Image (cartoon, rainbow, N blue to C red; front, side):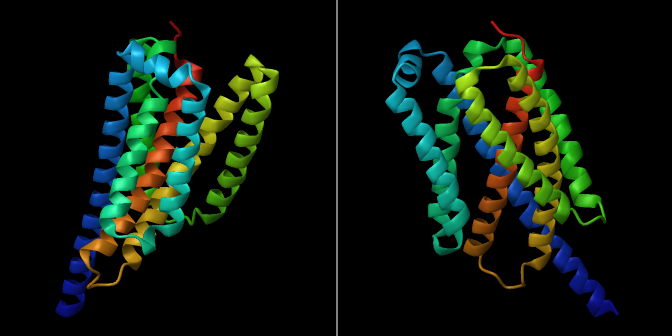
Length: 233
C-alpha cells in the first residue's frame, strides 16, 4: 500500500513538473511576442519595412506557418534544442507581424483586452485540467469551427464586410475558448502518459509541443477579443 502511494506521489510530481514546464515555455513565448511587437511598433522604419513591403509581410506569415507545421509534425525527430529554438523563433516572428495592433488599437484597449483574455484563458485551462468529462468530441467540433473561421476569413479578405468580420470574431472566441479547454485536457493526458525514466530531451520536446498549442490558443483568443472590444486609434 505504501509502495503504491509512493508511486502515485512520484507520478504526480512528474506530471506537475511537465505541466509547469509547458506553461513556463508558453509564458516565455508570449513574453517574447509582446516585447518584439512593442519594440517594432515604436520603430517607424521597422514598421515600414514589414508592412509596406507585401513580400516581406506575407513571407513572414508563410514562414511562421511553416514553423508551426514543422514543430507539430517533426518535433519527435528533432533535438530538444532545435525544437526550442524554432519555438522561440516563431514567437519572435509572430511579434513582428502582430506589431500592427499597437498602431490600430489604443494602448488602453490592448491592455484591458489582454487582462480579459488572460482571465478567460485561465478559467478555460482550469476547467480543462479539472473536468472529468472527456473533451475529445468538443475538440473535434472546435477544429471544424476553426476550419470554418479560416475559410470565412479568406472570403472576407475579398468582400471586406465589417459585419462578417464581427461574426467571425464572436465565433472565434467560442472556438478558441473550447480549444483551450480541450488542449489543456490533452496536455494533462499527455503528462499522465509519460513513462518514468524518459530523458530530459524527450520531456522538453513534449513541453514545447504543448506550449505551442496553448500559445496559439491564447494569441488567437486575444486577437478575436481585440476585434470585438478594442478601441481604434
